[in-house]
Image: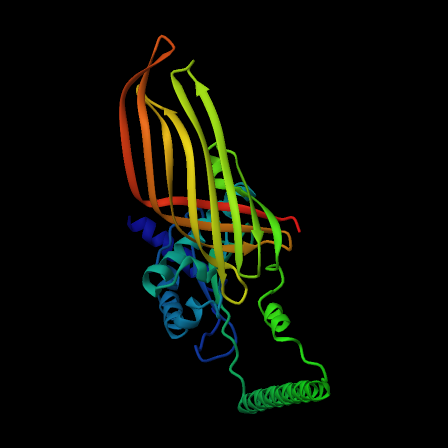
Length: 367
């Protein structure tokens, strides 16, 4: 052990004249550089050896002074690792990287930095050491600061002038529009008849009288084709009807899903754009469901209040979102299928209060 310490001490004396240290006054605007020496062929960072401890204290003192700017990314910390004691260039680069990481670990654990603060470069040349370079930006002089303040004040003043000119131009344009409107009103000699005026007010674009084809996409999603028509008899009122029909049989005759339904509706459209509406719905139909051992076949009838909103896609297409609440009455016969023959096994009557309609309907305006 004594021989090893003696050898390390001798190597330190030999390396001392070779590697100089750069002065690092923390307030100096020039970059601060620090050098840490490593034993040839060894990647361990011996802090007490060859002045590394004093150099590390100087580095940590500089880091502490500029820590906030370093963590924010304003001051980069450049770490360069060097190694030439290995047999190949690849081995030298690997050891240089390990040495750089040893030094960075000290700055992370003792200086509070993170890996994101560093720019690391490794070299297979020039010796066995690691340098740390902290690029501290220069402090602007009072004259430079005054020039910057003056430029900023001029920029703000120019922005204020531009904003004032913009507001003045907008006021002038508004006054011209008002003057033109007053001139047209004064020169108008013919008045629009009240009935036509009311009709024009109540017929925004896309809401005038016309015929539209409808398809409830929720019905189609349950394999129940659904089509309907809606006739706008005014800008606010419409009448329509939707019809649904489906018939599915599988597993022989053991499973059945069949339905037909007719649902007329009257709607009143509200608001300036006539998109939202309230309506009255009536529906009647027949069903035949056998999704388990017992099937149900019968009639249904009911109705309720509907409400919804139409989302316009373009001049011809729109999506109609609707929901109806009300009452449904159903009378049905229960049956079982025995050797392909339906055998009646009872009757059932149901009365339902609640949701009676839901729709996401594609509307295509024909004319």
